[in-house]
Length: 516
Image 1 (cartoon, rainbow, N blue to C red):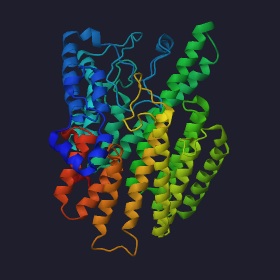
Image 2 (image 1 turned 90 degrees about the vertical axis):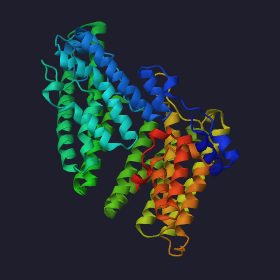
Image 3 (image 1 turned 180 degrees about the vertical axis):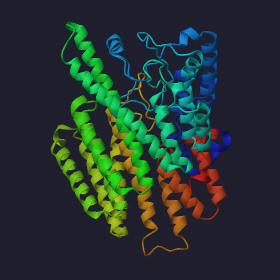
Image 4 (image 1 turned 120 degrees about the horizontal axis):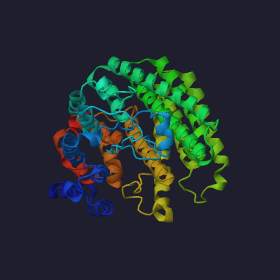
């Protein structure tokens, strides 16, 4: 639970009525959860990252002790790399990668490939047992913006791509892929972007190699050497494995995109974005991991990112072509809207795509220096999202939408929940952009400008504290405006109280002053 001081501060900021309507959930603490992977999930869903870290450290120590006492139990090679064909036939249903409608929080479960004849050394077995909990520790530190602490945890492992983390027979890595990806990407945050780029390209090449191998295995699987159910299972296993490596390729490419943008490598960034879009289109048609409607929405959001990047680097022609592509998708979804919900503000694919179009129109106005027009467009987006939220609250499908959107017990997230998240993100970005445009309007009074910007964002936060306190873009913008205005320390203390009530426990908060 939040401290009494933080609660009183939040009540004073929001007002008693708004606070009572927003503060509906009691935060789970370490004392309330089992000391297990389920406990880690519960703590993470409540934003208690400091306690996630503490529990992960405890579980790591416990599993390491068990591995030392019973080394034979942990010597089987974990299924974190491509298993041999015999393992594919033995466990076709296993898939380490979660589909895009699953939680991204790493789940610390070690599974052994009993069909593999490989055996790890005692030291490697202990290391393998610890790695899932190490990944959780790194994740928790990154969530709290403790980059140095995350780096220290990874460095303590040594070279995660080295022989100490590989199957002694197949030479495949047994480290969790997410940990390998974070280890490759982390140098970007500690001032070594070229090192990050080098490591990510090496990881990408490894993923592409596995993807090619899976494709060849898939061709073999379509020529059934086995009959009946065995052939079907082998084919399904091959497809699942290829999907896993395709997902990994895309994850590494997205990380590389951030590095290219950071290094101002514009042509490489453009080329990579287009490659990712082509790959995801082929992936969707092959695997159908999302519905066609949700895929179109995701593609629209990706094109919006490409559009903003083109504006950022001043590539007007590329931005115009991307803008046209977004309009084309929105027009196509609008033609299908008759089959969607009939409510005027229903949370449909068509309505969300229209909001993306409006947002892009606003960004185009910003690019042209038309800040008044941009403010009007961002205001239209905010008004439309608020109407849609109100419709959700009053509709049967919108019950409890003010509460935190949490996955079901199996980790899956419904498409309606994903659409609500998209809606919240569109709204928060429009609110931040609207306030930022105020600073560039020629008639703004410089003596009161910063206080006006703070007041604008505070008004949004008072209306939806639980939503906006969990938006990194919103919190960072508010911190930036507080830093530039007077009475910074008092404002940041009040913001910390608000975040303690509506986002996470106090110890999990990042250093707010370091966000600027």
